Image (spheres, rainbow, N blue to C red):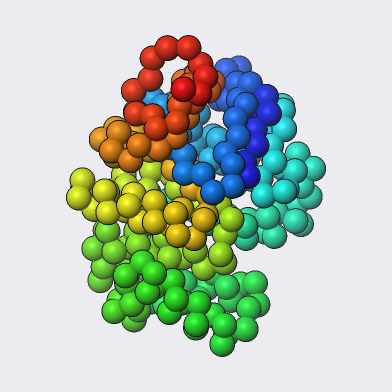
Length: 235
């Protein structure tokens, strides 16, 4: 579960709060979109969850970790409970697809026998088994994003976080990618939080939507659409 309680964030050297009094929960097994105009604080919330940035005030708990009290040496253990997907894929260009996925588990000293099995499992899950020995530059943008999603699944995360995952994809591939996240949510029971500006996709998915504006959560609607007007609150 992701639990924000009156969270604020001010970056050093600035007066304006990037996040102001943000309070919301994402329960285990939910699929939630986080939307808002450019500069509204979406990326800041993403970085607060991934522990890339410290919060200024309030409290955050994710997957039973209290991020306020989380010691630096425990951050890698916390991050293993997260699967993170980025807009720009962030694959290692000198490694094959299989090597990119295996690297995630090698750095935490998992037995190679289990790594190979897990690589095959997640590639089958995202429909990329036949691309196992390809290098990233040999793949299309949609294929690279599927590999990055497979990489996010390697450690069986409790939460998948996706930051503008369709930003570099055409509309058809964007829809396929969101459908894959939906399948991960439904079949693996993984919590999914997607930061996006893709209005058509949000409208089509019929999921819970959190609305952010000027660092504040201004709306929270089940089966929401991208556009928001009206009083704050779940509808």
